[in-house]
Every structure is written in structure tokens, then in C-alpha cells.
Length: 153
Length: 153
DNA sequence: GTATTTTTCAGAAAAATTTTCTTTTATGCA
DNA sequence: TGCATAAAAGAAAATTTTTCTGAAAAATAC
Image (cartoon, rainbow over all chains, first blue to last red; front, side, top):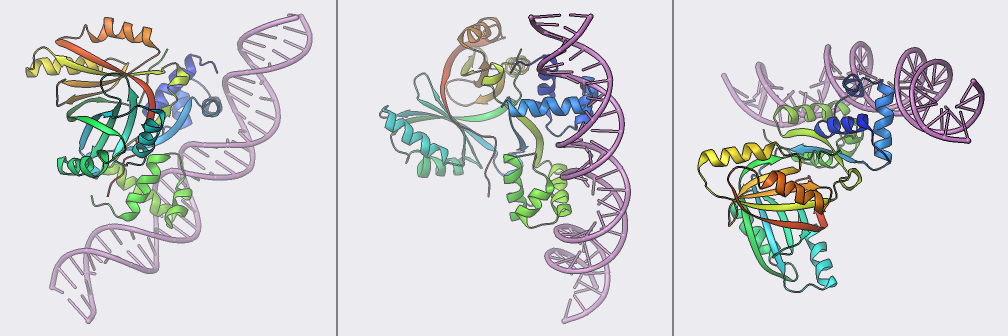
């Protein structure tokens, strides 16, 4: 699917606020409500739009402590990687996990209540995972920028 | 604001799909449509719900290359940090930036089209920022887990 | 233990939005 | 130019959100 300038602008608006009405969008885009509606449906059908989610204030629900964990595996066979990845997927504290290049194999974004909970997570969950070798954790001191909106073309 | 079991469940549903109707939610929660409506409004008023966003398929819009950049500043005075943070905020390629503990000062999540674009981003934007010392980049080989939904209580 | 206040919930009605349908307009191409 | 395809607009229908009113439940005071 080829995106034109209107699609690009539409996606920019939708990424920031998914709850805008088509009427609001139509006036921003100088289009009819129906035209906006059909463009959005097409973007959904083509998988450009993945989903609509609600973002919470993590501190207000008691998750004020974000940690980035770098993890090195002991072995790197396909079975070991697969096993580790499947286990990581079951951990609620892990919001993101990427297999990355460099000294460490994986980078995890972990959210917990506080340092005590992180310790508990480390000891009872992370280091008990199969094939985990060394880990190196960076604690978040300050959130400088945090957006889900991507900019393209 | 104190969250009860229904709120917690409601937030779990909303985090996964922000476009469910109150009718759908009401049947999942065994409540009336109005009760669901008022609980959501209260969660919005109290800032538990931050916002509603649309997530895109980044590969389909030409941003298939994710890089984590670790950055060390040359100096660490308040003015230097503030200046750096303000500049980072203006860069579209940087989705996330956290001030972190450890060997490096900042961790950035960067999204670009490919390695060529990353090189361009590095040379023309990242390393031209004020006070940036050394950097260390990790390229994402595989996305293992990537969610915005947090689990609490 | 009872009364009072506050909060939560439910159903109906109103307002607004989404979705469908039909017609019109624009665009590309032989 | 004429035909085919796609995009857009307006109206109508269907659905959803939002408001309103009153009842039930929970918390607080006396």
C-alpha cells in the first residue's frame, strides 16, 4: 500500500490521539467524515495501523521503577535462545525484550514498584531463567523522552 | 485514587484494546454501560489513564531498523544535561531517551529505515549534539517482546 | 443500631458518532 | 475523448457515547 500525504498526516494525528472523532480529523484534513473513515479502515486492513491502546501513568499504579537489563547467555544454540525467549515472554515485569548486537545478547525493559521489587524480580525470576549468564542493569534516573509515535517520510 | 478489582481488570482490557465499546466492556465486567463509562471517566480525571494512542507497524512505514544508543557525556553539570536533553527531544528518530545509571549516561531507542540512515543519523544528528562524548550502539536483531501494557497488583 | 451522606450502579432518553449506501467527482489510461 | 477505477461527499441508518434521574449499596456520623 502506498501512503499519500493525507495518509501520513492522518497517521500522525492518530498516533498522538486515537480517540479523536472522524469529524475532528475531517476538519483537520479538509476531507469529509466518510473519506476519513474509509482511509482509516484501509490503513487497518493493510496492517499499517497495528492496534489502538490505552497508556497508563505507570507511577500512579505503583510501577515507578524502570530498569534496563542487559543479558548474556551462556550458550547460543537455537534451542537455548528459543527457550530463553519463551520464558521472558511470560514475565509481566518485562515490557520489552530485544535480541541485540554487541557485548550482551538481550536488552530488557523492566518495570517494577521499587528497588526491593527489582531485587525480588532479579533473584526469583530473571536469574533463574534457563541459560542466563551475566547480567548488567541500568536504573532509570529520569525520563527524558518517551513516545510511541514514529515519524516517517 | 484507590483502584478496586474491577478497575484493575478494566485497565487490563483498555491497555490491550482502546477501541472496545463500553457495551463490550460491560459484558466482560458484568456491569452496566453507564457504570463502565463512569469508571473510565474517573480513571481519566485522576490521570491513571494517560492517553489513547494508535500503534503502527513500523516496518510497513519504512522504519525497520531499531537501535539502542548508549551515550556518555563529556561533562555532567546541570546545564550540560539540560541542553542535551532538550536537543534529544527534537529528534524524530529518538522514540525514547532515559537518563540511566551505569557506565553510560543515557539510553536512547532510535528508529530508522536501515543502516545507511542510521549512519546518517549518527553523523549528522547524534554526534553533533552538545557535550556528547562516547557512544555505543546495539542493533536490534530480533523483537522478542514489545508491549505497552503494564501489569500491577 | 439507626440516620445521613456519599458513592456506585442501572435504565431510559438525548446527543453524537460510526457505518452503510448512493451519487457525484476526480484520476489514470488507452 | 471516452471508459474504467478510485476517491470523495452527503444523507440515512445503526450504534455508541453521554446525560439525566432515581435506586441500591457503602461509608460515615450520631
